[in-house]
Length: 170
Ligand code: ADP
Image (cartoon, rainbow, N blue to C red; front, side):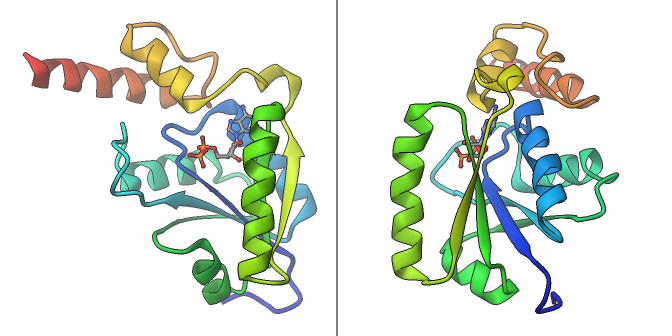
């Protein structure tokens, strides 16, 4: 359980897989907050490439040099999870106006559900403004090299997943 004077933030997402854009946001959040929970959302209705456990292990490995980071998975209501852990802020990334339009409404809804739970937005680094997990999956599914989009060591895992999937299809 956290110390009540700590400034904490939850960065929720699918992270399927974690990209350099996500990692940049995590590093910048760790300069602002005492503790950054990276929360992999368990969504049984969404088909994912990596299992929740695989994503948690991957993110943990990639962020092990950032002491403020804790990697967790969660299901159910975000506000309940934040209340349980005493988390006071949500972090979301903004790549463009499309992200803003979707995210501002969610943020406003969250403060109605849980007054005091504030969403903090960080604008994407220009190098990663185009980057999304779904784009990485599309390129990798077509056999492309995705190592320029991902933290070190993740591209071979993504390629391996697609090899397994194509074997299972045969
Ligand atoms: P979700 O399924 O919640 O959209 P994602 O894993 O796609 O989960 O993204 C999680 C968060 O990271 C979102 O706030 C999203 O806007 C942000 N994000 C995704 N890609 C980038 C990027 N390239 N640069 C900055 N933020 C990003």
